[in-house]
Amino acid sequence: MIITCPSCNKKFKIQDELIPSKGRNLQCGSCNHYWFYKIENKTVELIKLEEDIQEKVTEHSEENELNSIDSNTLTAKLKEELDKDIKKENIIQKSDLPKKSTNITFSKFLSYIIVSIISFAVFVILIDTIKTPLIDIFPGLEILLFNLFETLQDIKLFIIDLF
Image (cartoon, rainbow, N blue to C red):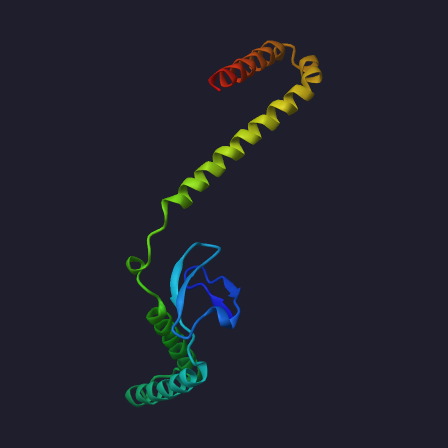
């Protein structure tokens, strides 16, 4: 079956047996939105919607006979309104959902730190590789590069002394 996230409207293909008949909480992989999803019998719901739409169309046409709105346009608008109402009934309030774990935010923070360290190491290796052509083009850069590599050597020795 295809399930659509009510927050970002992203569609996901999920096997039918993963959703029990009583429903279950789902989380969007794109926007991390939580909601409760329950499988409903669509045919009964569609028949009910069509009956409700026809009733509203006849009520509306009786009240406003002079109005020049096309009945097909009115039917389409009423279907949209009913679809919105159905979606609102299936969504659980955010306060009812379990709170996000702090482990998720800590792991994201840790991932950013690791990526930053690796990126800095790659940058230093790249600068060391093309050091000679850079010094030829920018003569004043030699002192800065020397100081950078000396500082990195001092940090390396400091870390070794810690262990």
